Length: 547
Image (cartoon, rainbow, N blue to C red; front, side):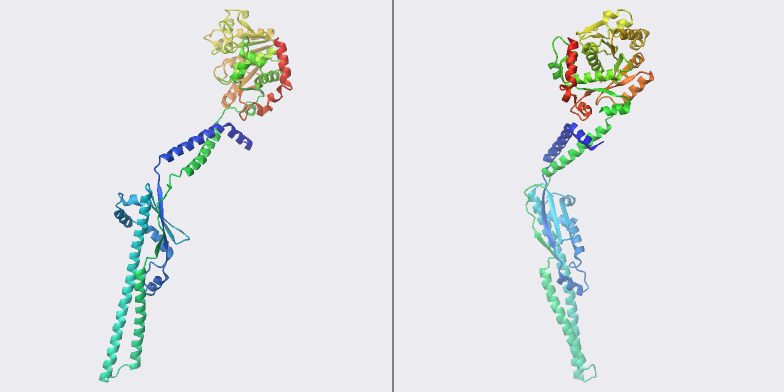
């Protein structure tokens, strides 16, 4: 399929696309407005690793919350949603919910390339959302500060313990030095003892300085976390986001409608254009008959004329030109064989074979030919309805020899068109149509008329058309666009070939020229040139013959 055909499909099925898209948007819109609005409030925490705390605790060989900031960021984010913290916030705010319900309201995200932790709370009440977010953040910071202070306090106690040991060593060295001097006993030299005492005092002084710094660190400790953004009361709900939902509905509607349109087009096995008829049936297309609007037929109909004949005589539409073109094609393809008895049939019911047969017979008669139209659809006759004739007597009476041919033949207008309606419905249509009497009748009519146009039942419905096909000189198969399936058309061709009938070609009926495979697409549009050339001369000829 070419790109242009895709655009033609879209153009043809644009109503379906618009309808499906609008329904999708409407459903999403209604779903959005009935949803309870959800508000989100967010607080932001900055992780601030302390080099001083890390240095002090590192010198003491103690683990520190100040060290390993990458690990700290993810760990702290996980701690925000821990159940103990959830219970503390629930108790503080007196919330009527379980820790699991509380956790579902909270989402925590830690930036990969930043030192920030975002705490977001979703709730149907905007004030409640911001209150929970801020309370949760403050509680988390307080707990973290307590944990950090506890760690510093532990380090301070360790330093204090070492200072006491140093003090004890200094006292011991001093007593020993004094005692040995008083007794005059030999011992370590004064210089050596003094040196030891001096070293101990230096260590003590250093530890004392660290001890004071740890006290300051303990007082100022925040656990390496700071609240940089306080959650404010949201003014607009975060969900449902109606503009966003409508945009997504538009995209979804277009995608779904496109899938539906192209999917159904792909699965549609009906005949859509003349090329498919020639491809699958391997027969020429003799004509394409457009859909005739009722208003157009009414405008061109006189009181004393049948609708069909009036349409052909007076109409300057493409429908009239289509039948003239069909007449010309049949005469051209029939130039050598001179087929005078022609069956007009179709694969299935509702393809418009009776209308085509009646209009073709009328068009041939208007061109000066002697034409008789015979309704051989003895089961569901329609010809008498189309041409507005009495069906009390007809073909069935002739076949059972209850009436003479002249008694059942009726004239239509003054253009040389004769009609034999079906007559009363017989109990055995197939036997009558397959009888020798029917063969004799067709032969007799061929001698009396230039063309014998026979309307039969559909090929796939009953065997009547196939039975008659072996008795005539040509068969024209009517295929209704977007109705006749390829399988039915192929089966009809095979059935007709079994009796060695001459399948002259096919006529595509009910063509909508507004659709992509319409009447214009194949022949460039008859109405564009009708008044200028062929249509003008054909109409003049038809009017002359009619008068």
